[in-house]
Image 1: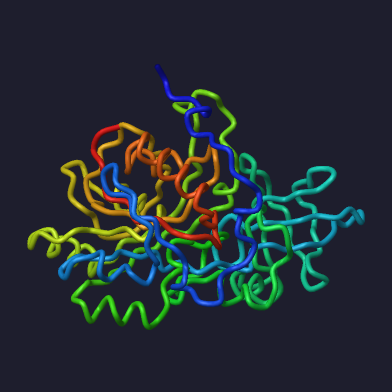
Image 2 (image 1 turned 120 degrees about the vertical axis):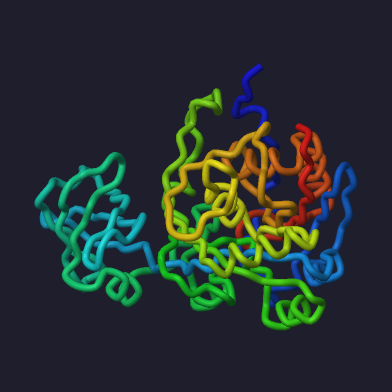
Length: 343
């Protein structure tokens, strides 16, 4: 039987959706799923749950101030959500307006600058900005908190909706598994002999789009850009050679590593695009363990973790998390999942 959206649904009490971060990043709870066993831990316990010689791989993307409000030349209101920066002065973006903007039209954004509509590309629009796109977006835009956070972004989000190691501008959503790490925890991990390496995957606006097909095999993922540095490939190969485990911090890191393979299954250095859609039955070739937050019902991310941890085990873990009051989604608690190669 083909898998359907209903296989990845679950009832979530709204009060478990975290609306703000905890005062301390590493104070989150951590549900450890290994095989069929479930353990309730704290995120700051992570160093003792890993072994010296293991390697954590983290996504160092930085969230852009990618949401901008404004108006069309006709006066109609618009909301722009940047999907990606294409060139120094061009971006791909979602544009919400009462009527679709026309090619050649202009949008006045944040009472600060005008952009030209160059044309439509699928559900996105290609826009030309009057200068350096990243600089203008960062100066005038707003942090794009996820739609399930029912408040506007505030000053504390400027720090807390970025990882402490974020450096490469380009995402419209944070790689949220990394939000639990702070400087003392990173120091503790290094002191224990656990390696740390980085990749970059810029999360696109498509991450907020629901799956609209009942048969999930018909779903098409949005493409996202990634980069894997030579130092990270070297660290992964050295870790594997000595029998250490590769621990992906977040689903974005996992998708990057499982995408960056050549025809012979060897990790490639450099940049690429991935539209990899991971569902149960997928054969993982790089990642041994995954750190991740709790994901929305019927989402591609829930499908990914079900593939990694096993569908029955993930269902049991989510039931346990709900029963024990774990906090869900971007500002919520975390899971450590050991790979389970049977569905």
